[in-house]
Structure formats: structure tokens, C-alpha cells
Length: 210
Image 1 (spheres, rainbow, N blue to C red):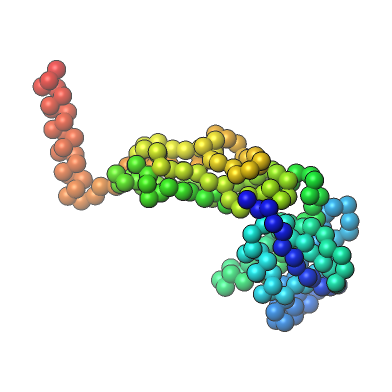
Image 2 (spheres, rainbow, N blue to C red; image 1 turned 45 degrees about the vertical axis):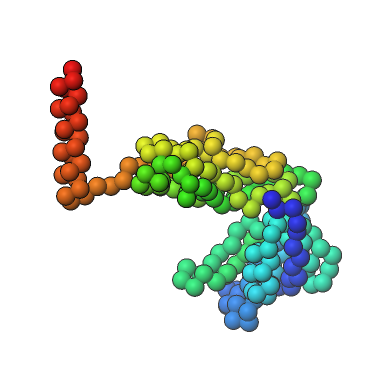
């Protein structure tokens, strides 16, 4: 669970033209905006390496200091990345009150795939949901919500109601949303014919038994 915050020093900047943002990126900085909390938005630029390290650290809350001033807690609301290189291009940071709940999108982590009873039998796992929205206090936002497929059988599915939210967080998404599905293994070619023959033999045996 995200119980620790990280610190990040940023510099304010004038919200000018796009060429200024490009210049910041060439200088190894990422442009962004801090907004919310009943205050005016502030355009910022932050060292790209420091930002990557901060976002990789444990904890959803970031203590941001603008131009060396006092810190204020924020969370990452949105990050834009380069479609090819994956580099951070722009970040939106939202001011938060640590005593008020917020909603945050976190990954849905599928666990126990190696021990899944249906997967061991050749079932094909299809993941339909990869992110969920959690509501909790900022310092209680989990790094991920987990969903175990250990007991999932072929031909069955799991919904978000089966997911586990660590700590005191709650899921905002509809509980009956199908998150994963386990379908039967695909059979092709000669194997398909053999499977059809086996099924036919089974039908004939059943009829004979009747």
C-alpha cells in the first residue's frame, strides 16, 4: 500500500507557446501543470530523470516544492508519453488534502497464473480490464488491485467483485464488470478432427448406454 510520499523539486514557468515546451524537453525537463485545491494552476518544469525516479518510488503522494518554496501534497493525475520512445512529455499534478478521499486509477494485477487450475489444463486467459478506479485517502491509494485466477476453471470468468483492494480503499467501477475470462484451448488441424471423433464416440456411447 502507498503509505509513503516522495519529494520533488520543480520550477515554475510561464505557460507560453508549444516551442517553449519543446525547448524544456530538449534541456532534459518535462513541462507540466499543478492544479486543484482551490488555487490557480501553476505551469512547471521538472528534471526528467528526477521525475522518473519519483514516479517509480512507492507512494501515490508527491510532496512538491515550487521554486524552493514550501511543499504541498499532489498526486499524478495524467502523464503524456511519446508514442514511440515512451518518454514523458507532459504531466498533470493534482493538489490533494490528505484528510479527504480521492479517486485514482491504478493497475489491475492478475495473480496466481502459474497455479491456476484452469490454466494448467490449457485454458486461455483473456484479460478484459487492466486498470480500475479506487477511492481512498491519498496515502491509502494502493499501488495495484489484485485478482487471483487460482480457482478459475475453463469456461468461467471473474468480475471486479472478485478483486482485492488492499487497505481501506474501495472500487468505484461496477462490481459485475467481467475482468478476466478463461476459454477452452484452441484445437486446429488433425487435432480438431480427433477431438470431433472423440466427441462423436462419446455421443454414440451415451446413446448405447440409454
